[in-house]
Image (tube, helix red, strand yellow):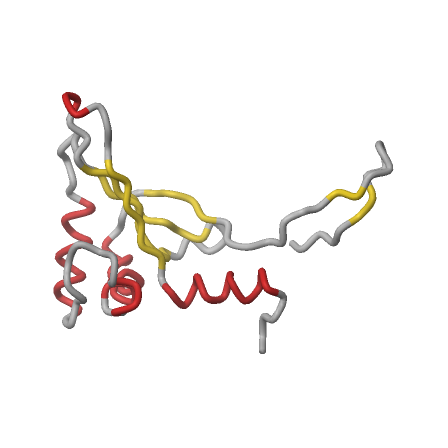
Length: 129
C-alpha cells in the first residue's frame, strides 16, 4: 500500500512514509521451492557475489534445496525468503560459521533479481514502464 506524504494530524508536521515494497518472511525450505531458487541460482547477476558457480542444471538446484531442508548442524542454517502474501519463495537467507568459540556469524542472502527489480522500479515510481 502506498501512503502519500501527509500532514500529521497531531503535530501539524509533514510525515514521510515509505512506499510499499516487498513483504518478506522467513520460513523453512520445501521441495517445491526448487523452481523459484533455480531462478536465482541460474542467474549470473544474482550469483556474482555467491560462493558457488551459477547452476546450469536444475538438478543442481534441487540438490541444494534438499540440503537446505535437511540442514541440521547448529553452525549453519538456511531459510527461504517468501513473499508473505503469496508464500512464494523469492530467495534465501543463511548464517554460517556460527561456532560458539568464534563469537560471530556470517549472514548471506540472495533474492531473485526479477523480484528485486520490481521493488526498485516501484520505489522509484516508474513501475509498469
